[in-house]
Image (cartoon, rainbow, N blue to C red):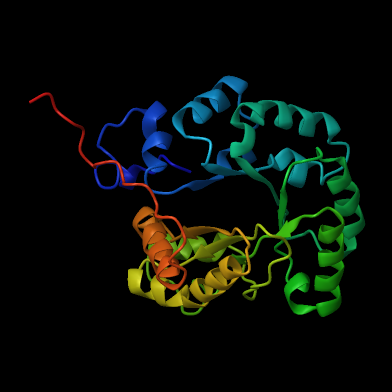
Length: 275
């Protein structure tokens, strides 16, 4: 996600061409959730245009198409997986992980199918799995069973922390929409691999969002000290403040772990002129 309308003219220049918006986003953040791939596998030409806009250190966490994870429930998907892998090839090492987001209906009884599916994915691709069934968060046996399946594939468990969102009733249309669509599960803060991925949803109120992420600042700093390489994605209900918040989170982590590299200088929010 790098083309949000409220960012234009604020974080990014107004009127920035569609083909340059990822380039602009990459001056604010060094990773992106490839959420558009959930709806359809993009053409190779489209992916080539993404690769051309960012350097090789930029990270894409690309979501597998919903036809694979939701439509076919990970069964008989070899051809679709192959097409996805071919489409992603232009990104090369920029693909940080394949993101397997499973529906809320996927529960512990589906773990055998998940294990079989993970074995069909291409060797060498880092895999990150997001589950939304409450049993995995409330039943220790289910959590251990899932961790065992993920460990067998060297895969990470992606937590989506919505606890701040659901702590108090919504106060805006965007928050009310989030209440109807986002998973309501307990916070989980355990990394399984050297490359943990965290998704955090705050509120419209910036300071409530910042207060809510405090546990993650300490956790991410701890992971870095352990030699892990975490990736954190920050959201608010409308995401209007997300770019600025991402840099604020990064600054808070860097204050605790000074050796973390600085983010790049943001693209000016105005287009340069000739005079």
